[in-house]
Amino acid sequence: MPDFLLLAETAHKMSPLVYLTLILALGVGAQWLAWKFKLPSILLLLAFGFAFGQFADVRIDDFLAEGDGHNSPLLSVVGLFVAIILFEGGLTLKFAELKESGLPILRLCTLTVALSFGLTTVFMAKVLGYDIRIAALIGSILTVTGPTVIAPLLRHVNPTRKMASIVKWEGIVVDPIGAILGVLVFKVAMAPNLDAAQSDTLKAIGIMIVVGVLGALLVAKGVEQLLKHHLVPDYLQPVFLLAVVAVAFTGSNQIEKEAGLLTVTVLGIALANQKSVSVRHILEFKENLRTLIISSLFLVLSGRIAPLTLMDSLQKGLLLLAFLIVVGRPLSVFLGLIGSKKTTLKERTFLAALAPRGIVAAAVTSIFALEFEQAATSGRFGESLSPAIAAQSRELVPLVFLVIIGTVSIYGLTATPLARRLGLAAKDATGILFAGADPWARAAAKILHEDGHRVMLLDTNYPNISAAKMLGLEAHRANILSEFAEEELDFNGLGHLIAGTPNDEVNSIAAFRFIHQFGRSGVWQLKPVDRRDHNGNGGKGHHRKAAAEDLRSRICFAGGPDHHAMADRIAAGHEMKKSQITEVFDFAQFQAANPDALVMFLADAKGLRPAPVDLAKVAAGTTLYLLAPPVEVTAPA
Image (cartoon, rainbow, N blue to C red; front, side, top):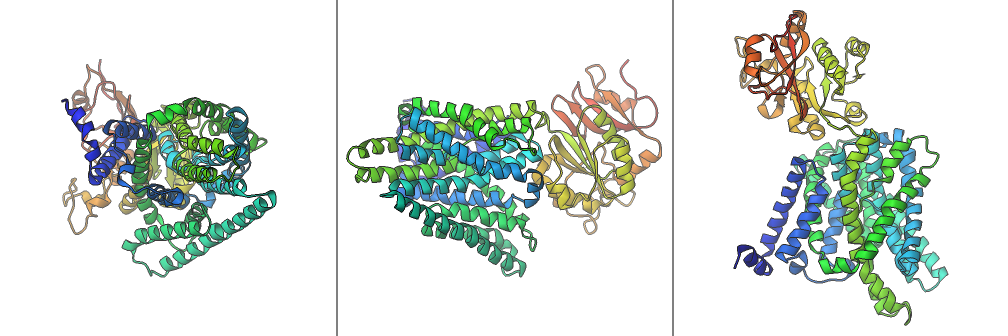
């Protein structure tokens, strides 16, 4: 018997440990492949999860006890994981972002949600033939997008800061709104009469406001005071806050169904915008946890889908998917933002073409589908309607999963090219952010800018910034370590930071702070002076005087010049030049002919990047940007 048949035959004997290990390995593998081949990670996670579930014929349900509604172990775990993701998303929402995009965000989270709810409900009832209560439930749930799908897509698309801010706020804020809408629809559907429905709805709204908003603000204030007075040690703060989120989410849900999502979202926003203590280290912990959770959730939930179940709902699912993408989302966005002076037509077009559904839609649908089915089975809708509603309830989960798979696939594949075509995302994010605008940095930025590469210079020295602006360069008088630099500047199109201030410690800290923005491969600094030995040559420096290596970033420019060396070259009249490496004129020949030239940047089909300190080989077809004496650079005859 072939090996793969033996594996499939023994899959049911797979232990929970093996299953969880494979989920972790496949999740990390999918994320890595997505990064390597520049694909949306969600697509690979869905594909890996579906393939694993069908090939191995093993699902998470095989290891869990059965349960109904909120008592389902899987749905309980999914709910808690979603709460952590929403809290982490709330930690990224700063009120400063609302200065430029507050009105569009408000409209997207109110008018657009209402329009989407109404349009989807009408389509489900009139076109697909669902009972109005089932139709309204799906209409409310499908108003959500969510950070589980938005965050990975934004990382892949890398749009402008304004667009990223709007999409991020909408994706995080509408999740609890959609869940609350679902609760209200359920209460209305289950009410015996209109008066009871009105009473139950108003009561639920009041409880959610008290628990989800006021309760969250009180918890946030308590956490702020504990951290401010150092009553929680640093090493315990991330897990302490994780426990607080879990307690707040579970406690809120015990008081009012689905109020927990609102609670953790408001809790995250409140902590992100208080000024007493820094929560940056907590956010970094949560970002890592989010990646792990998203990978696991998509693999586990997509692995539960049986092909036959999807096939039974395929026709209705495709019709609903087509309606949402072609009609529902564009119409609700354009009508919701009509007359908005804060968004351009291109920005509204991008927003209209981006609304992937994620884990929250799947989890909430699973809960309410079970509860609708139980209510129908018990005869609450009457003898004539109950069997039909029960049958429709069983169709909801595969229907929503088809929407999730379809929206993630379509938006995941089209968002990046659309954003680039609309001019809302750079084709190659390989531009350079210079921390420091000294003469050598201005000279380098000028030649890169003239060749079409995006450059940005930051410096606290007014004459440096003034000189940069006189050259037509984008320059800001700001500290690279300021909140302004990190939170308000638009880094779209920038892929590298060169920390080149005269202060080596500032360079190291700046590079460390921007790892989350550019990755470790994209942060560079000039060689620190303490790397010189007593003769002035390069080295690791004395272990008592030199900063630790883990506080360093990559050293830029061939040979590793420090700030003094760069200033000396400019003082000696060196100028920025270009040279092309070819099959005839290779890098070794270039070095022999130009021994005094300092190679600073390389540009080829992969884009622009700083030259590493240990540059030894350069492929043919590469353009060299170099600082050289004021003589003609030798090139091939």
